[in-house]
Image (tube, rainbow, N blue to C red):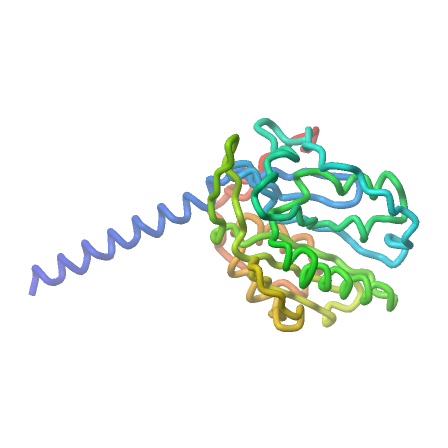
Length: 258
């Protein structure tokens, strides 16, 4: 009987150690907060990929005066080296998919050009980038056209990334993308999507989900940051997500942030 109790205690200790290691791995990720002109990035420096981009969308942001796109995406020098370069995505079979789309920022030239940084893109299959992801962007603009001011966050499920290698550097393919849009003045108006990053075209309505479902899938550091940014009544409680002081140490301030 005593041997059985000791064995159960030993298994519990091993389980606790395993959970602690998993939590440490999540907290140890270097998430860097970068502010651009009209959007902000939570960038995972360990995989050189944005985990999340978030911004506010109004009808006046996309009146459609800017159409001339830059020839390539620029490296983001607000990030420390190494930095993702435009050529890193050549011959991969994936397209450079915007997170904050240029179509949401074409009312001013400087806003429009500011979306063409490699820190604002993730590898997407052509079917997703030109299909369901584009449809979701259009749906968000339609909501804003109806007089709503939206807070939007989109990005990747970091735990689902697959590593590929080119002749120069590894790049990370997200298996799953997400997007959340919540009305600033009417938090009951919410839209959320989880999009498989595959070659099959799908309707964006088939990707509908809830914000609560997404909170449980994204990195805890990112979830806690977005919880403060979105309208508070829309965000479920995440108590004891971090040890005391962990949130501040996990988000690395750069570019003059305090």
